[in-house]
Amino acid sequence: MSKKIEVCLTPSLIDLYDIEQSIVVVIDILRATSSITYGIENGATAIIPVANVEDCLNYSDKGYLLAAERNGEVVEGYDFGNSPFSYTKEKVSGKIIVLTTTNGTKALHLANKRAFQVVIGSFLNLDSLCEYLKKQDKNVLLLCAGWKDQFNLEDTLFAGAVVSKLRKNFEHFDDSSVAAEDLYSLAKDDLRKYLHKSSHSHRLAQLNIEEDVVFCLQLNVCEAIPVLQGEKLVKLVS
Amino acid sequence: MSKKIEVCLTPSLIDLYDIEQSIVVVIDILRATSSITYGIENGATAIIPVANVEDCLNYSDKGYLLAAERNGEVVEGYDFGNSPFSYTKEKVSGKIIVLTTTNGTKALHLANKRAFQVVIGSFLNLDSLCEYLKKQDKNVLLLCAGWKDQFNLEDTLFAGAVVSKLRKNFEHFDDSSVAAEDLYSLAKDDLRKYLHKSSHSHRLAQLNIEEDVVFCLQLNVCEAIPVLQGEKLVKLVS
Image 1 (cartoon, each protein chain N blue to C red):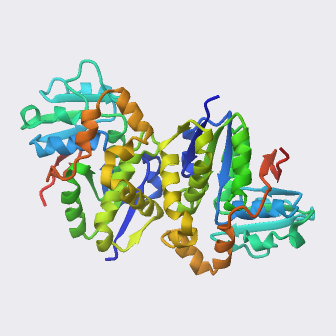
Image 2 (image 1 turned 30 degrees about the horizontal axis):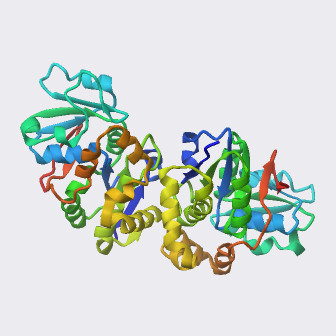
Image 3 (image 1 turned 90 degrees about the vertical axis):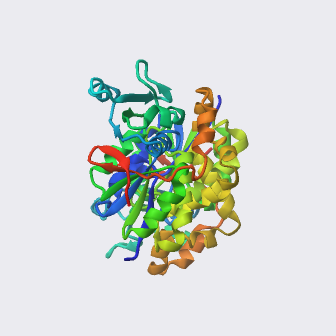
């Protein structure tokens, strides 16, 4: 088939896309999908994304790890939030994690309702993800989680990185994929420096998570591709 | 005051913005806001944007010119559509025009409900518009009409041109204004060539309106700034 890539710049726009036969890549670089990738790479059995902090509590007596973040901070009383440094092998191997974040889990649930398949993208698993997408006979929608339904730079840059890698293997590109690819071409030599322009970057600087930002902008330190199976994110076996 | 510029990439996202005290610039480069600018420059008394083709007909016995475009083509039976070449001095001077277009009038009506002021932007009046915005003590929202609620390149490039001109006079910029400015920096030396990447450009090529596209990408051939007063677009007197 003649394959198409589109970039949905915020979850608010997802109803404009026909995704029943598409693979949707959910992108929330700072930090949900980076941490999910790292956690699955490090042997977490599953990560269960839930819509709100209260839903997390429904899992509290099952021995799962509970992770909740709102506005960039760990919610009081939870095991951890969405810093990738909480998703190390020592902490997550063999465990099930229940996670809610400001933007990422919302995007996941929106995609999960209609898509053929939902996978997780981050700079950490860029090449592995792109190799997978090249081989599938499906259209691709890159779904940026954004910040509270608004456009953000870091998710768009990652979408642009994917478009750039897949350009030769796809035939159709919408305007937002052209824009994302061009922005990535401007930013790729120093992603951290480029993101200093971003309003989210200022917010994150205030939260003192510069180490997390640097971690999340590393390319190809993971092979795992998390995939939604029912309500759980697990490691894709392709 | 410390002034803010934001770019709303499609009309679907406008509810995310607080615009009660902002000037909203409506942008539909190909071709509604270019033609509106040119028509007001050429002495049209007023242009009345209406939501749909049927609403246009309500004005048919008033001696107004009726302009209706859908999917890039003039609707049968109307005086003209939104080609700028229909808005010359000979055709529109002293006249009132009733206009409906696919994307532009929808964006205008959404903005008109809440904004402090709604003005019209196009490459044709770029400098004139920016000089006006610099002098006002108001935040600015650049509202891209897009294509059927999706992001498009040409409207975003114009938003980027405005951000670029106003950077020294404003203090706060959201992520989409940073992206728009950077895309404009890539495109500005040859806007037409850049837009060949766009899906809309392919659509327009099929409609055989290359002359219109070239016309709409001219910088600063007009001084007029159309402004909404009630339901009518008229020439701003500043």
